[in-house]
Image (cartoon, rainbow over all chains, first blue to last red; front, side, top):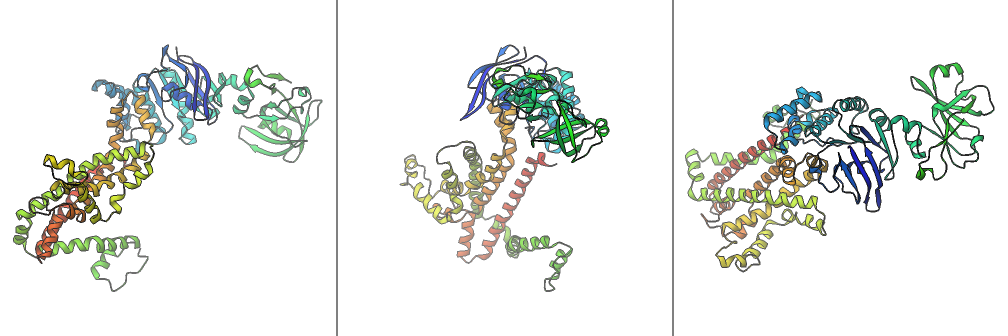
Length: 343
Length: 284
């Protein structure tokens, strides 16, 4: 059940958009496809929808093979970044569109539309045209329109991408809650890791047409499978090999999260000297930008109390202790072995 | 708020109207007044000066009625045909990529650029009984040049670019996503065209048809060459106006001119209303 993608490839001219991708989206889950632009996440979503035909591979939705079916026959709901509402139709007419195509009776259409207007909390705005709505309202209408036909899966392509920061935050929480209500297998594409972390049950991280890792938000953050995931999810410091004595033999970069760096005033056996170059106050915490003795920049994250207790400031030299550094052996990206942790 | 003080030599009525208006407003009124209102008013006043009985007699003379019929009905038929064909051509030019598309796109403007007399000459050459096209119709007793059909052909020719040029930018702005959304909701290509693509295109199509119609009503140069200008057959109203002038019948000419002007204004106003209705969803 859910969505199964097997060995899908897609090429646009010389550009390999998808390269032998396998993916399982479990029934009822909300999954994020996360990656930079050009990573193939949108192409994968559109291939599942049937808006893009893959060069090879197979796609199943709820156990039925969909590879050679049209979009119309796949029973999917699709939400676009720029809403793609029918601007000559009112909100009600937009939501009713799919039902009318399916020749659902008038009374039933009205009942469904009212139900969906309740769901998207736009009861009073049914007779407005899309041009008279805000961006967030439009995207909710687009969602209701997609849900109206009771699709087997819901696919969303950068659904919050066109919205202001505040509206985006509200709407993604709303989408998460909505998913809890309807429990429809859903896949959404985003390039914003914070968004993926906040909304998704599971995150699929994509890069250059391949899947780097699939896991819960916590898993991809705590146990990144590849250097790409480490860099893409959360902030990270990248240090050249050989800097840290326990790591001298590895011959590749070392990754350290900003919160895994401890600042202290007294040197220890494993600490390094660093100069504070800049301090950024972030309300709940402090971001400290440092420069190691061999001109290597480093960012550390402390909570306010810790910082105030230290009592140091820009320009002063302190000692940093690198805790929980993660290293990847060469060729790790292909093998997917678990990262080497050391202290 | 008069940025430029009104020159004292202006007629007092005009300065009273423009007083309190900003410079762009005053200038717009002045310009439109001189370029549009004044000539139109001149035709009306001259025609009305003949007296209502005389006006009515000239305006409803059988020859005049027949000329209105040829002008307006043929122009409407030509604009309607272009409404369909122009939409199709614009669609092909925007949606399809084929070798020579840019050249075809440029050729569309030919009726704009060509002197109308040249267009009439060219059409008469092609559509006469021995012409490239006309020779295929002549055996069936269908004569194109020097009949009302020829008038129709000329009007189609000169009004074609309007619909294409009005529609092209709108077609280019149609988001492919909207069609994909309709597909994802289960709509067939026919349903997508009828329910999603065509409705927002109706206002520009109507605008194009209205412009083409106005152009066809006003056309003189090409029609006079491809028609025989025989009353009750293929004589158009603008040619009738010219014939009246040739006979030094200035009164007759202005009356028919005034009727033409009035009918055109009413039709344009109606089409404008239709467009407003077609655009109702764009109003915030």
